[in-house]
Length: 152
Image (cartoon, rainbow, N blue to C red; front, side, top):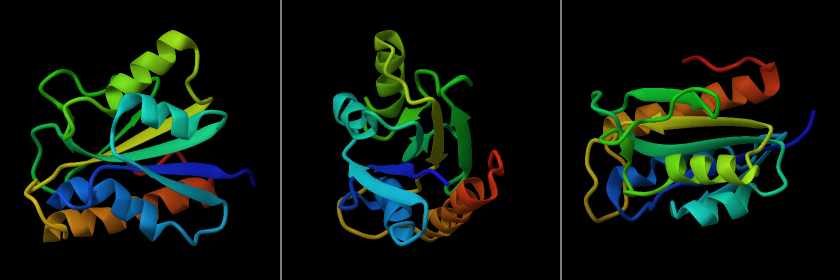
């Protein structure tokens, strides 16, 4: 089994924006998975996945669903359109498009987005996002160890 890089995007000091890093921390001891955390700057995300064949990115994504909703995209599927975006303003979608234009996308790229409830200063996730973190972590383990394409 080859290693899969899971990148948790976000800031754990901004409430539910810490969803991505929380998933990365939950997966840090799982065999076959290597984790990294990024703030959301597109070039930082690209540097993180540079040279990796299989990458899963997790971020807080405001797409109009209820808090804790989970979205799953691949680099081949439509990413959130303007108005349906990362909590950072610029981030994962921009990194994907920039990498695509430069021919630097990983061979397999999956993005999980978790709808935030609150993006206020302070550490700690809302209950709905905390529950979604556990669901996404389990889906990623299944995807990596079971070879499935995810639950969503």
